[in-house]
Length: 353
Image (spheres, rainbow, N blue to C red):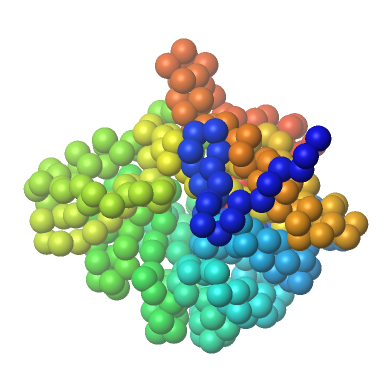
């Protein structure tokens, strides 16, 4: 039996649906300093064992392997990645990798004001900040923390540090913040950021999810067209998760419609958890352990072969399958809280959202 040949740099490899491996999301911690209702609604959580969490050197080694196979976009995530001590040191290690064209970070912004400049100096290109409301009392209700002012300060610090283009992510939940769509868009316009509306997803720890709480892509566009006039699609989506649109005044915004209009067949991203589990889909229930072979001394060639053979067999289209369940009237929260306690890897805050 011959080993799987490794692709050359001129021959990118693809999965069973023709999707290349280009975008890697790297979680640096499963911990978070907020308790957002759509992500972490339960009272108690099971955390990854500290000894299993990858060191910065191990993360850099795995990222190097992925980039030698074609990955050129790396995004640091969590949990809340800014909780990881001395994160700029990791950013500096990754920034030295010439194959990474886009080195980004997604954060809730609470600790960003203190770290924005250090991250930029270390080589981070840009940030995406979660901002679900402009109202402090709603923020407290959603996150169970009083940190709204710190998030806004973090956004301003990111602008000053040059972590641009700056993007803001808003998860819309019917009856909670769907009355702020226009206000959030105006705020983003005012600070020169691009806002992306995200449909409430039934993934991971979203144990309180229900279909009637979803504000759909169609709902968002209808509201914006009623207020602004014609909204024009920007024909450049490619492999990106967001569809981008343009208002009559030239303002660009995005919609990530994973729930009602899945984009599985153009998804080129995978996720590496803080303890080295590699997931091929946000809805995947099982991952591939890269930590164990790495710590047992596997060579770069061995790791590449494992990654290539796994990706080439990839059939994942989790969001589409969830939509198919909805058509049958069988769609509900993805997993039960008891399952999450048995396997914390099912949590969205563990695998990097």
